[in-house]
Image (cartoon, rainbow, N blue to C red; front, top):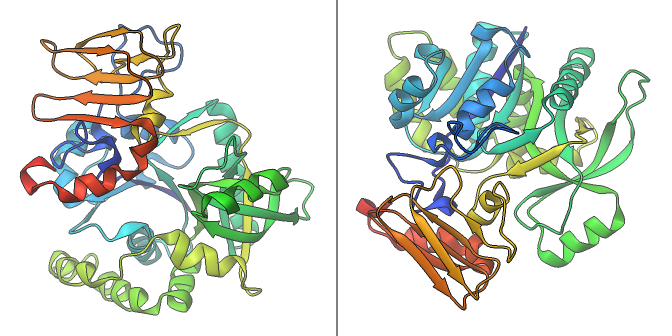
Length: 375
């Protein structure tokens, strides 16, 4: 049977100070539906992600994997998700364990289950193309349960924050156009390598979305990250019993903190015994994980300044300034810029952030220096 899981456990440190511990980025009202007027209510990326997968799998087979502390907020925002449909992580242990926890649970309740992994970070259009590509991903795994299917995006610049997928030959199936064998999977290369990858025309960005069989993923974890597999099997054994909560709380924090990209996809892509396949997604894809990427969801004025958007209730004024992003959640506050260029200014009643656009990827460093009351 088909299942789907949305990963929504990120802390959103690159969207601080709007994204905070009690209100993470996946619950922020970041975007409005395509073509909707400015007066239309904004939606969170998690709401958009949940709507995007409606109809792809049976409604009761959709899950959200998130921090346990966000369970109540997510249930309030998305009432269809509650109880066992929210997989609550006691502590964040990166994407390998979010995927592994889901695989362990699904393999127990549906031993032949296939599941898709989505994220709560993306703006994707058009929906029809997205659904067609995901449907192909499911069919590829159902035809060969040993496959690990990832989805790739044509790069528009030499990004260093994404993984890159090198395509080999097409999948030998006339019913699978746009599906390729993967020659290599490289997570977050440096700028020089990223530039070479884009120039070659043979690499695409990894979208962070996957389809695979639950038992196949668990086998890959056993091979490539056995210390994680051992803990996940303890959790699986206790799942559905009176010891479920206790074992999860005791074991999950001990799992090695690592992404699914580093732990599985990189080694699997060069392992001849594993079939890694990518499906190209010819669509508009935006990872809204930082302030510059959020700015891309906004229209700009004649000088390239992007003001407000769905998050903003404040006022902004720019004079002799260009290519800035200004956002304020305080309706009584005015941000004014004179003679400024390429700045990002984010204001909330609790904190104000000012930084050059070029430093946006370093916001995690600043976040790490904050006291717990400000995170």
